[in-house]
Length: 193
Image 1 (cartoon, helix red, strand yellow):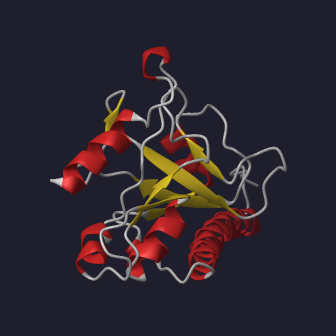
Image 2: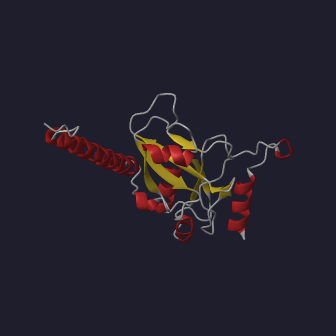
């Protein structure tokens, strides 16, 4: 007989394999989205509370962080940074953002990551102006560690911005030793006007 190289059963097996791969990818994306929803819900937040936030799969995390390898998590969500006027904070020609990883990942991998060779910026929730308008604490600006805490505080009527870490409030420039980081000084001046 004539050998065509593949019988009909092999063809169906190949189609089934591709369908299984597509289904696995869909499950992964769904589970990442579910993990993101659960992570934010622990802070009584939704993804829509993070201005222009979005779910990232494993490979999108890798791309967003500019890394040659993914950090070993299922995925995460993007937390883009904006100034008080809602303009993107730019650094090295890209919008500054951090990624909150979700799902199992190595113990030595932080839960939050940003691109390398970037500086610290305050996270200004889009809800900050409303929090000042409806403030339960007057004109006091609270500074916390972590974007989710800042958003949750603003939603609760407590004007709040976040820093990506407890030591990121202070300028690392020798000429500015002991001073707040420039972005934070600028924000306080804007709010005081």
